[in-house]
Image (cartoon, rainbow over all chains, first blue to last red; front, side, top):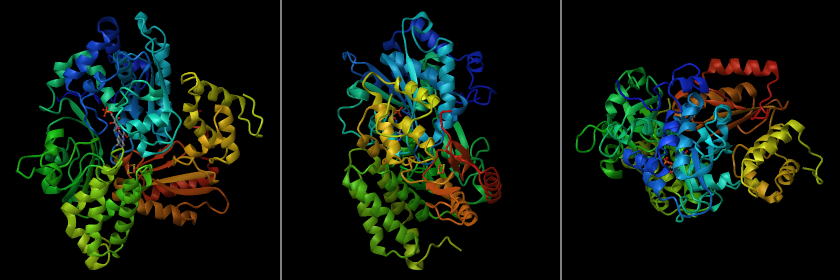
Length: 435
Length: 177
Ligand SMILES: Cc1cc2nc3c(=O)[nH]c(=O)nc-3n(C[C@H](O)[C@H](O)[C@H](O)COP(=O)(O)O)c2cc1C
Ligand code: FES
């Protein structure tokens, strides 16, 4: 049986209640930590585990915690990033609505390690019903003495709150999230300074993804070595993959990192193959922002090795022939899917979500949407394919935050791997996939 | 909290909630409560934020009205124009599109006789397209109030609309309560 850290008990009826969660061993890591572990030793354990951020960037969690300004006499803050807005990603919602106490338990561990007395879970406003589930669980944790003053007589006190967003993808970017939590527009800040030095209310702050935080109790209970024994050399542990699109079994799967992509797509344990016995055409493996790959390159690297679900294997070949693990939003397209139209929906998304601070992103996303709209409708010209690629190139790397890159990569990769499909739209003067 | 400039006043239960929320932030950082308050204010005002309502929120938080307007206009969940009693939000991003979101939207448009972005003449329904709702595994997806409706097909849309029409659906209740 594969080890499950995040979905082990996910089907247990009543898991969202304190009693059920506690009966299944919940909050043991908090007892252990507050009784016998120093904040620093928790950080060391997380560092040693090799856990990398699950929000998309894959930054080592322990290393990020070590950047926190320990000498600062200002309050420290720990924030959970529950913005979950990257198209194709729907894993955090699963944890939040079915297993909120595991998230709370992780929040207590992280807050203790970072010396935070107040912590916030910032959750996208659309998921208000999940916010209410989490707030109920927080209330229970207060009643049972795991939150509030002097937790379990340890002298450590923590307040935990939920904060709703207002509908803005950009607020998933951690500095935009902090601005939003301060009651402002979600405009990303220029880094440095990083939030570990200047974050919420200008205080040292760490922002971590829901899934990252939900891993913490297991790491403290079982130890860093047990965690690091799972996965591959550079990708430790397990990962939630949210799979959607043209597969037989869309859903949320916890895989040990290093699982072959082919097994993930075709095995009945996971996606169960392509719907209607259709052919696999393309996959966006890590949420809408990562480069799209055609079937042959997602199943095997350019060197002919099996492609694995791990940070390093998905990156193999760089952007020429590889992609990224990203958030684990796994979007599958079969041979009936129009790459150009799918890309148009992404371009519209990024145009809508650009905060507007940086000209290349604000203007470029609009142009890309407009040109894609023309091409998709059969009104484009061959020159416009190059223009599109050129705009993407000029957004990439020229903006305050990576939303610009995230908007550019899907475009440049679709042209790189599926140029003939753009050309077909222009030659036929219509979408070749419409009947 | 007395307000001098507007005739709006939240009911006591809502004001109690507002005060509980403001206490979540450090002294002097009450502006952090702006997004929660805008959600509440919108629900108290038939699903949209009038200038008068935003001015009231500014008074509650002791900030300038412009600080409320600039935030309300940034986030897509806040409506700055009146909407119908029941606001139907249809996800249109890639994964939902791959699974037939366009047909779902077209069916809503046909049955309600309006386009996305419009409100029916009787003021009962508004239709709006939105971006990925983080439920792509159950595409196509729509949101109405705080409810998600997933794995939609034409038949389910018909059933939902029949129910909402019969019960005179209102989707603007306070999301916290
Ligand atoms: C445009 C943009 C959107 C993002 N959206 C999310 C998101 O929805 N959820 C998330 O956890 N991280 C998101 N991130 C990543 C965060 O900036 C940040 O890296 C993350 O919260 C760090 O947590 P982790 O190290 O635990 O992954 C986004 C980044 C960018 C640039
Ligand atoms: S694309 Fe519709 S929920 Fe994600």
